[in-house]
Image (cartoon, rainbow, N blue to C red; front, side):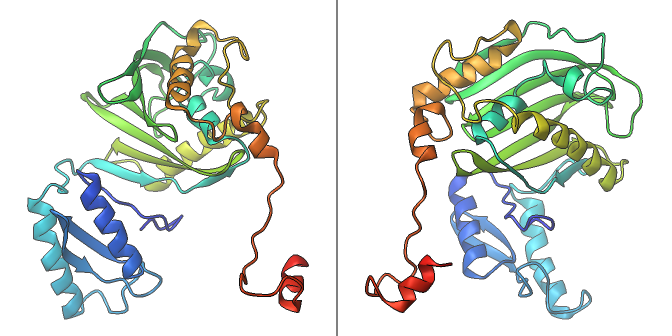
Length: 310
């Protein structure tokens, strides 16, 4: 469970086992679990707020819990063979715009030198070179490959710039991945994920997570670098008009650099996505009617009246 946002963190190799792990967290109000073949095989209880043990670290029960869980992790599919790869959850950010707009912005590199000067881009390197974007039918995902751009700082702790190579992927309408050739290890990839929790057509929470090949940078420096970038993006996406994603052809005129956006919007339209789009605008602007919490109370009872006056 994430320390900052208290969101569940569920690494895994298949969705079925991951769902079993999430249900175990819900049933036991937190804790750590290992799941294999649909069965919880090890548990580390966290009875205080689901995050903290009620025993000291040197307690025999705690040591026994860790001894039970460690071999299963180390020998199983969840073992991390890359000890220098950092897992950096970046908290969550509420945004008053469509979650689809956030994903679209994440897939774009043309704005880097203008919105993120001296961090992700800089003049005069403002041109977005051609790249390939496609809907991969075999996996039903949007991909953009062979993307290059000049990054003013190739890493959070570096001051030098250079040309970076990126791959973008949208595995679902409200999630996106960015893979970057690691500056310090050209044969490996850094990965940045963006997960969107839509709460209303024009309201969402964004939750970025980084998986970086970096065993030297302080955690706070990595976190600050990503949060500064996200804050700069926040000013743009919350001031786009319309806030909802337009999917009709001709509603916005794309440029050559918008190839990934065009593919993403076409994919959304093919999938029949309307939540957070201008197609669902009528529903988005319809006044919300609160459902009564006490469904068994008579229509004119004092209890219902108190609810209406809240």
